[in-house]
Length: 146
Length: 146
DNA sequence: CCTAAGTTCTCTAGCAACTAGAGCTTCAAG
DNA sequence: CTTGAAGCTCTAGTTGCTAGAGAACTTAGG
Image (cartoon, rainbow over all chains, first blue to last red; front, side, top):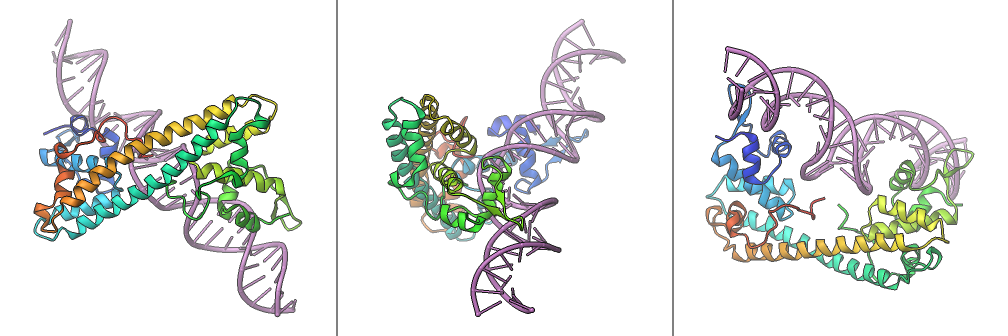
């Protein structure tokens, strides 16, 4: 049995985060010691590592909740898990596309800055006048802003 | 003079967001009509468009606050504006790198899913066992998670 | 056995950057 | 002059944590 600190070290998750996961029901309520401290089994460590890994891949806690409940029913079809992963992939791809466009525009801005006065600064000017802007990031959905 | 709704339409910003920007001091307090409604000048529209554009490029409101105060002093050096833009570019580049790695791992997960039962599902398995993971996204800084 | 340091406990509040809703007033069109 | 849209203020919610206060527990050294 591990204390919460050891569990956190083992899984690479901070202690308050573990308590937070328990609070929102992502982790089950931990067993307690005589002195009311949380104790964790190896299974709990696995579950937390799963969460950690999925968070690292950018899954939301909601998606992770779904994946966890799927993994509790190993006899069912994995279509749902596949769908969640594909949705996540699509999300990542769309962010990538947007970030690539942003990078191009930022590079243009920075390169054009001649190091003079603010009045002539391309950075300020480009930001102030959208006509200078080649990308469409000003329009409808800005999905890199969560 | 524009009402808040017209201003929002013109700049592509939602009405509550404009009030929020005023509340946090990013926009000055608007003039009011006899009936206490906000009225905006062309200058205010420019300022809001600037903010909108910078947000679209991923600048934080803090960075935008700095850029705005720089643009109020056109006779100063633009080194500071340049530095802010370069920092933003570096940030975008680092996110891009991470997202690219995530995309690769998600693709591996999804491709390997044979569509069988959960028990054999690669998606769940890969998430549960970090040894399957080629990238280092589990380690120290997860900067795509704001 | 006792004390001191280190963990852990609960609880509340805060972060970014908005978004949503309640309940009211004002404005513009017909 | 009425009606419906748009405006007002205020509070609270979102996501995924993080920070702090103040109390209790645990463990290693003397």
